Amino acid sequence: MSKLRFIDAAVITQAVADLCVDANICIGADMYAALKTAHGAELSQLAKSALQDLLQNADIAQKEKLALCQDTGMAVVFISIGDTVHVQGNIEDAVNEGVRQGYHKGYFRSSVVSDPIKRTNTQDNTPAVIYYDFLQGDTLKITVAPKGFGSENMSALKMLMPSDGIEGVEEFVVQTVKAAGANPCPPIVVGVGVGGTMEKAALLAKQALLRDIGTPHPNPFWAEFELRTLSRINALGIGAAGFGGKTTALGVHVLPYPTHIAGLPVAVNIGCHATRHKTKEI
Amino acid sequence: MDTIKIKSPVSNADIAKLRAGDKVLLSGVLYTARDAAHKRIADLMRDNKPLPLDLTGQTVYYAGPCPAPPDKAIGSCGPTTSSRMDVYAGGLIQKGIFRVMIGKGDRNGAVIDAIQQHNGLYLAAIGGAGALISLCVKKAEIAAFADLGAEAIYKLTVQDMPLIVAADCKGGNLYELQ
Image (cartoon, rainbow over all chains, first blue to last red; front, side, top):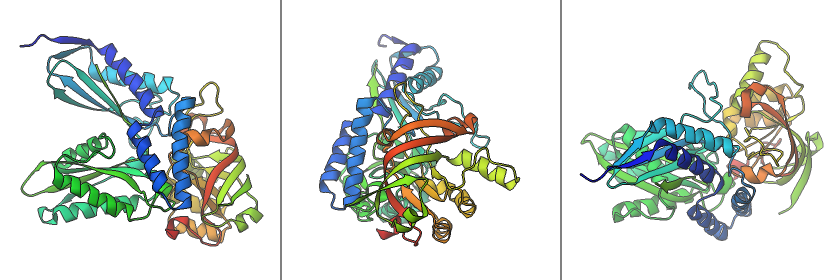
């Protein structure tokens, strides 16, 4: 057995805090480039000016150290733990303390309520939504993806029938984006999870949003599905800010997974024009 | 494309001339209110209790801003999804409160009808441009419901806030023009 590597939980807290600040202020280089391309291609005056505003917004956020969006989201945190890593301390507490510190330091909005019905604000944006998985080796990888609810609310899941096939999946994705209209702050990123069980499909859809924009799925069948669906979505004409125009989505990202003989779960998770996520390896 | 400069509170003359798709730069006073503040206002009105401030004729901005960093009037301050306030908007417009609304995304038929019947106006801000919009805010103070934090009613003084007319008093709707 390889030698264990010990990582103090305080190191995780610091990394999560830094990632919360970075993700909320600095747009990903891939997203910025995609917005620029969309701006160059746009013919509608209103949509072109909206794309210009979104690019300028990203510049201002970075320069003035302001959050890209007032909805600094619920912090979704993915922790991948190397199999020879041992964390000293409580990982969940460490992550939540990182969120608490990062949101305070960045002057970010506290958007989390402690009970979904009673709705009392926790005042520090905790708790985060945390997912764990395992890697080979001695590193620990942390991704923070603050998720705003303008786009989260427009997401949807449906248990299709196997006979619905790829056409059924495509139709459900397109109809979900159509119903979302201007609400998720287009141009959007469309994360699609296909297969697994109900909750697996939803998690895949979320994870699909973490892929660099414009990177196709490695399997040609799914890469073609992504392109075909993207072109149907952009033909909807919702456009930037919902003001009409060519670019409603910057990308469609699919993650398929084996499923049951009786089922075809499909989840669509919509990401906004910034689709914020930052990763750090320790 | 021409940009029309208007003042808030918005005059009846300005409301009458604006049409869906017009580009506007708005200056003046706005009041933020979103889900929780609307619920409180609706509950007070249902119980025939007075509101904490007179909002008649005022403009509402559906927004819950980030806290102000030390050197700024306010933090990031973009629009939230307006349709969540549709359930309250019709009743308020009828009473002359928040007849001019700023948010993002389409409204339901009842709100579009109320805008037409009561000489209202719905303006769209650029969803996701919170940092850019925050620079238009020159002054921000809590006006009511301080305990709601980001969901409190803030009185904002804005200068040249970029907006698009989304629904006008003649029934025009930007989101249906597409």
